[in-house]
Structures are given as C-alpha cells and as structure tokens.
Image: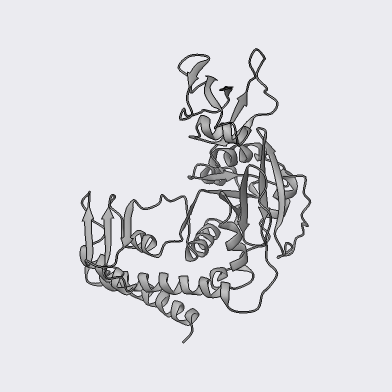
Amino acid sequence: MGILEKISEIEKEIQRTQKNKATEYHLGLLKAKLARYRAQLLEGSKTSGPKGEGFDVMKSGDARVALVGFPSVGKSTLLSTLTSTTSECASYEFTTLTCIPGVIEHNGASIQLLDLPGIIEGAAAGKGRGRQVISVARTADIVVMMLDALKGDIQKELLTKELEAVGIRLNKKRPNIYFKEKKGGGISITATCILTKISERMINLILHEYKIFNADVVFRDDCGTEEFIDVVVGKRKYMPCLYVYNKIDQISIEEVDRIAWQPHCVVISCNMLLNLEHLKDMIWRYLHLITVYTKKPGKKPDFNDGLILRSNCTVEHACHAIHRTLVQNFKYGQVWGHSAKYNGQHVGLSHKMAHEDVLLVTKK
C-alpha cells in the first residue's frame, strides 16, 4: 500500500470515528500518523520522480503576495487590473498554466503579486500542478485566496483544507509550545497553564508514534492535539490570509454585506473595478508594512522616496535599509512622528519606528 492509499484510509477512519472521551486517544494517534505520512509524501516529491518545469520566480520588491484559488475565479483578471502585467484571461478553466509575476505600486512600496495556476481538489496529494503551486505559496509573505462570490464558502473550506494538508496554517498563531529532543532522560512534560485539550498520556502517545522517547516539552498555552503535532513535525508555515470574493456585481447587496463582515474578507468586482483600492490597503495592512522618511541636516524631509520597512522595526533596521555600513558609524538618530515623545527626539538603534516617521541619522 502506497503513501497516498495510507493517507486515504486514515482520513476515512477519522471520518468514521465518533468524537468522544473513549475515542480521543485513537483519533490523536490517527492524526499523528496522517501528519507523518503527509510529511513523507512532500519529502518524497522533492527527491523522487523526473524533474518537471518549476515555478521559480526571483523574489523582488518589498514583499511577496501569492494569489491562489480554483480555476476561473478571476485571478488573472485581478493581476492585470492591479499591475502593469498582462495575464491571459478567458472564460475557460486553466487559462494560466505557470506562475506569472506582477508588481503592485502602493504607498511607495513595490509588492510582488504572483498569479498561480488554479488549484484543484486533491492538489496536496499531487493532482494537477498542486504541489508546485503550494510550494510557491509557502515562499510568500501573505496569501490572497481568490473566491467566487456565487459559490458560497465551500471554495474557502476546500482550499484551506488543501493548504493545511501541506503544512500551511492560515490566520493562525504559532502554538506557544517549547519542544526539544534530547539524548536521554525520558520525556519531561511541564505546563504553565491548565491543559484542557490534551492529556499527558496523549502527549506520550504522539511522541512514541514519531519514535521520540527523550524530549523536553513545555506548554505555555492551552493547546490541543493538532497544534502539538504541528510543533513535533515542524516545517509549518503560519501565514496571514485575505479571502477575496470576486464577482459581487452578480449577487444581492444583502449577500455582499454578509460576506464583507466576515473576518479577513474583502469583496470586489474585477470587471466593474469595485473596491480594488480597499483591497490594496488591506494587502498593505496584512503585510505589516510602514513607510519611514529620511531627512538630511538643515533640509526638509524627502517625502518622495521613503523606506519601506516592517512594523515593529527599529532605527537599526532603517539604517541597514539606507546603507549596510551606517550602523557601524551610527552616533545617534533624531525622530519626528508618532513614535517620538517630542519632535526631534534623540534616539538610539533600538528605538521602534512608526508609520510615516521622519528619521535623521548623525554619524560619528
């Protein structure tokens, strides 16, 4: 029996098994086996089989956004609308057969947008070009999931399932669990909070399933079985995701209102150019980008060419963005803006910058 057949059997067994106190350990072991086989499937895809055409696209700009979705939901139309790149658009499925990059210019930032071929059900198992699409999506900073507003929420559920099968966790926090294998001493389990979703016996069963008999485990949050399996397996990618519902011009205003109020959702119409500026603003917000302007002594700030940085960045990050040797010669900085207590505040390298701050750097 191959790995795909084993995965299929375990998934059917999980669906058949009722969830209750008597079956929780059995279900936990099944989930651990399923995660192990899926990891083997992905590792095997890198080493076995003939080489095919990849989707390698050089990373450029200030951030990268992966555009994923089922065929014929409007991904290519969105790319052509938001960027200067033209992607083939047609009414038939699988118009896009490879990865097409474009660049969104917004708030002075260059954001690389990747139009990926449509995903089909079973992509995680290798159907279509699903694995290639998903592997490129893992290299992005955020995922924009393009959905058809006419088809309800079923597309979102299916795509989320496919991405989770290959270790991409959308809009989820990394579990606050410390895990480290060691050479001896058995399994040490401690928790800084009361665990209600997982027991010590379940933790031991999962570790034994992965042939781990010596490890330190510290739970700092009340996490469940699946979250602990993610920590043990590793190689999980936790990514922010925007759910973009296209074709809102073809549904009722009540349905548009219902979708728009859901978490992480944006409603648009590519054909009628509705709400596209709001989509750009949301992409900017989910990328956690800020603009920092620079100033020379005795001159006005340069508001035409700002530094594009990540939120919570420091003066040190800004110095690296200006020139790689500036930190070595740094004496002090002066900041005007939201992060400063007063205009022209003298700061050090560890000072956190805010959006639209102005920075002046004085060298030694």
